[in-house]
Length: 149
Image 1 (tube, one colour):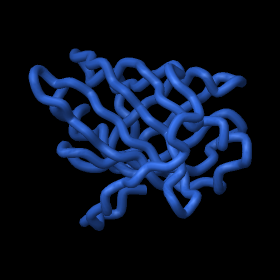
Image 2 (cartoon, one colour; image 1 turned 90 degrees about the vertical axis):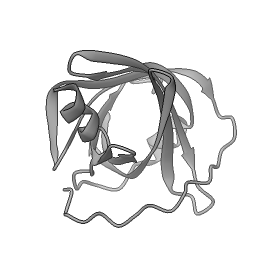
Image 3 (tube, rainbow, N blue to C red; image 1 turned 135 degrees about the vertical axis):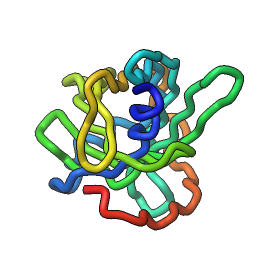
């Protein structure tokens, strides 16, 4: 189950509305926990705007002695306080659904693959730093072989 959830971590994003201006305040570094069924990993999640003004993210979690780094992209409003996005790392691609506190200082989320989130696969964070380095360079993403929405 842990491997299934870990593979699910990097999936695609559900369709939704473009981000509202409110999410400009997301920029920063968040520390939290990534749960993959029966395993929990510390995770650092960074939200930034790329040089084209598009919100993207980078995350890193420690798996034993290895660090796994991935990217977050294709952010969409799901509701007034929630966004959906896609993730991509060594395990694959998937969907991440995040719900933010009113002040955008905390989030809770669920993740999965093939457009579905999995029970026991959660991702949360609290803002550790904000407004630092407003832009990031995200490596080019490979084209998914299958539709992820």
